[in-house]
Length: 188
Image (cartoon, rainbow, N blue to C red):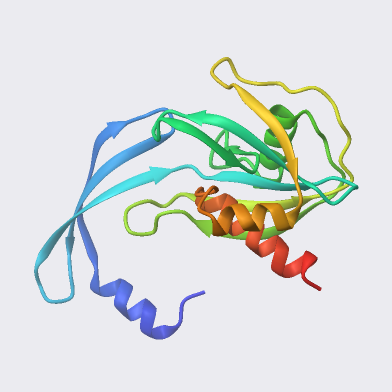
């Protein structure tokens, strides 16, 4: 919901040209020419993303399931919550969260609860990730994509918070998810 001041600001920015520069399998890259409030024309680089879903999966013993995988863009492994992109903008994020949880960890879950919703890089990207809380986990078998190599690990909330504080976990969705879960559920 926008307040009237933010709506007025939005109307002061007018897109003059929306040009697709490159179409990718996950993102599309656009360059927009925009008339800005002072009358100048600005150029914005925009990454269009169809969205994603992520899961804070909590076992009965209270430990959170994490996935360790190599991230090519960083040139190293990361420790993250299970997550993945939507199969299309119309796919419900809850369905994507269930799919990614099972594919990456092998676990299924009972009810999902929306924990948080984030925009990952607001300056140039519209990627939105809905982060769900999953409990009542049932173990099963991973269903990894051909290019996925994922190890599943489990940690306490305190261990994960310390990894965030020590800069050992640097993935933004994972940091947000851990800290939101800790504040909402484990610090009472």
